[in-house]
Length: 193
Image 1 (cartoon, rainbow, N blue to C red):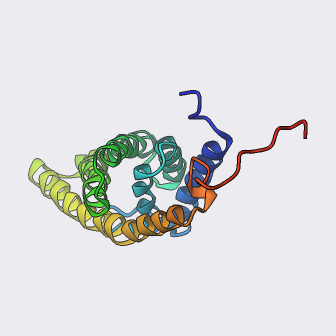
Image 2: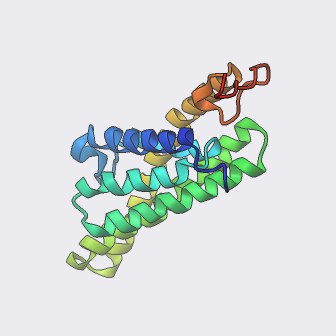
């Protein structure tokens, strides 16, 4: 745990959280619509496959972005928790699976399914008292299907491109995306020199 809180990781977490908020808020109200969410920031949910610091970054970014959702504290708390749980599960998949395509498929499944379960509950809970049980049930499953589709689009469409872009940058040795120095890089000189 000693090496977890490096300057690079803290900075990377701040950038991820800020990107999540910016990529959500730039789309205004259409980023928060129940049936069709235009939220490309969800592609960032693939980042725990690379970086453990993406877990708290996505959680904080989601909570900050949900301040503007119009669903109140329900979306801030429960939407944030959905992102936190799915980020932990995605990170776990990244640690267990070595094949890159399978890693994306399994790791991307968690943000899709967790959000598809939780977000419709928030929407139906807030607006469900206006209609009977049958309408609530239909509304939940319509929102569930819509969330699966839109979340899957962002995770597997845009997120997989992000995954392979970061993988390529890591293979090229771009230090921002690496936690260790390149193998042929010389040791840092002592401060006295």
